[in-house]
Length: 382
Ligand SMILES: [Zn+2]
Image (cartoon, rainbow, N blue to C red; front, side):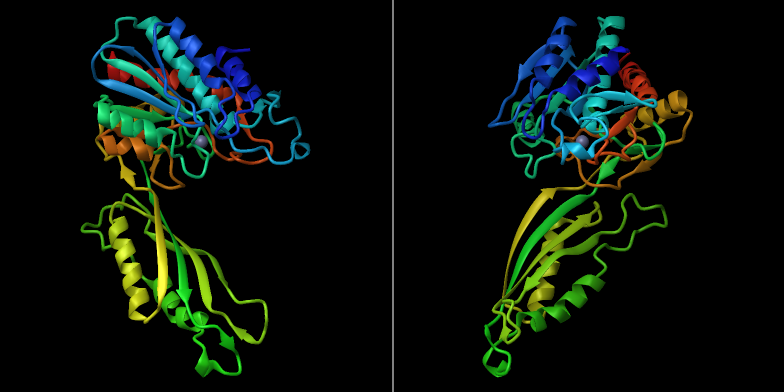
């Protein structure tokens, strides 16, 4: 067994379903402390966060990951138990193998190798881990640590996130930004009444329908100023839930409830999306309440950035691939680090099986990852 495979298996055996860390970070801290890393445990509420750094001054290259995993679902549905790492046909199976204990193990091994080969390296290398990435709020994870970093003036120049980014082959896709996510809980108020006496009621379904047509047809982004490829897919507006009605066929309901979500790029702002949505609802004369929740602002690491160019070069040279440089997919903890003025790039294993039954990672890819992360360190700091 290799070092990275061994460590990944050790981590999978720990049942660290959010917000549990189940001893993953203690194991990693002990290893890195042996190599001279300075360790800080930053526990907030029920969440474990680990900060390990090596070296002095700047520049600072940080690796970012999470030790928590999503629940396995019914264990009987798995071919082998989700928390018993198992190698079959060249793949390592287990919850977290791809998202993202494999990459966390690869980062640890890469950092160990890097400081052993370059004990007097310039600047600092660091690792930030949280046990609250997969949860619904991320309040006490990287969001909170980033607030503390901002307050204390902690220097970070570059951040490599090990989230599973690849589509089919290691190195075929890196993420250079993420869209923002803005959610709203909408209630349209009407007046309940008998369906036979509509003049004595106000039907919120009828009132909302024309507004919904307009919202769904709206183009939210300004036209790009140049013909250059846009950095983000167009902003999307989606209704994920729509409910009204009492269950009775002869009652006009008193209210309509909807959950809405925007995924948006840097061409839009959350404030503008909120204002335009509310303007459309007002224009249709609706009486409504709308509560907004901004779960992440968009971020983008521009082309030409030192980290972005370095990661692309590593994919070319170590994987023989020209990586797609994407801003697609959901959001990630990188959204809390980027606003500190940090270049953020995500590169990790193939994401085809993440959150699924029989989650797995290719053993060959896993064994190739430490050299890629180590190469990023060497190109930026040596
Ligand atoms: Zn993840």
